[in-house]
Length: 375
Ligand code: CO8
Image 1: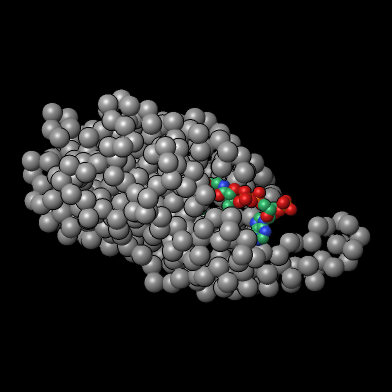
Image 2 (image 1 turned 180 degrees about the vertical axis):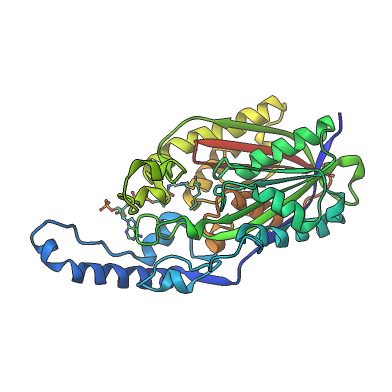
């Protein structure tokens, strides 16, 4: 058996930023247009008026101030209300693979490794731009890695579940050096015309290099252990899928709202919090550790109040500055990439022996935790 370690991480951040104010201006312009167009039906109570959004609500309810996206012009155009990403030919790199190359190269540079030394690529994300061939195999080809590659999807927990899969394969010897990469294009999946969720997501790509600790070229994070858990819930759901076209005889599909991100946010908030806190605490207990031994929690980045609650529950007190860093104010929810951005940005100050937990949670429900030690 070999000891796996995270030896490098990288974050690719798109250039375009949308502030809450820009987002609300665009959404409200769209809603007012719709209301004007439907004025008669609204007056006859046949159609409900679209409610307006507010930047104050967004920051108060979530802590999110802005988000990065691949394309902001389409999202902010009330005539369009979604990102515009031109179609690519089959000979061009896919959008996810293009983002992934950038994050993989940053992670490889941090590990001091060449792509040719990698023999496992896992593309772990909450959506994949096509069914096959796997995006991971395309990434493997584009960066020049060897071995094998596959896609996996556990929604917001894809990265931690991917780390567990890679760490287990390195431990047993079926892979020697892995990249787990998380290209998240949430902007193409969220419904920007729905005020309940239009503010939640952003785009990013993260990557980590995992290899045998004995081969690490510099300071690294030993993966002491991992824990993954799932419990079925419909409270975060997307019904897009290949069977969709079999349910109609016409070209136009009926009600397409559920082909985008859907959630019952309040229920998610209430149900996921106890699940995550108990998960982290039992993971620590299994390792004969208490919260006092943990220097930092790199949590999934969905909601500031959620993270405040989990931090308090796990540590048994209000976390001190730096013990539970949030990046969601700048990135919003980037699905599986969130906890990895936090880890990548807030881990280099660790001293040898310091312990931390990367923890993701989300649709499924799913929870994944990775206990790491600085070496
Ligand atoms: N502006 C003004 N008012 C608003 C807005 C808005 N934008 N949105 C909602 N309101 C109103 C509501 O209509 C409601 O009004 P009323 O009381 O009159 O009915 C009121 O504000 C309160 O609404 P909510 O109860 O919905 O507000 P909350 O305080 O619950 O906050 C949150 C909403 C922020 C969504 C919160 O519930 C939350 O963060 N929940 C947890 C959600 C979560 O973590 N989900 C994880 C999803 S991510 C995941 O699992 C990955 C999925 C796959 C990736 C998908 C990629 C796109």
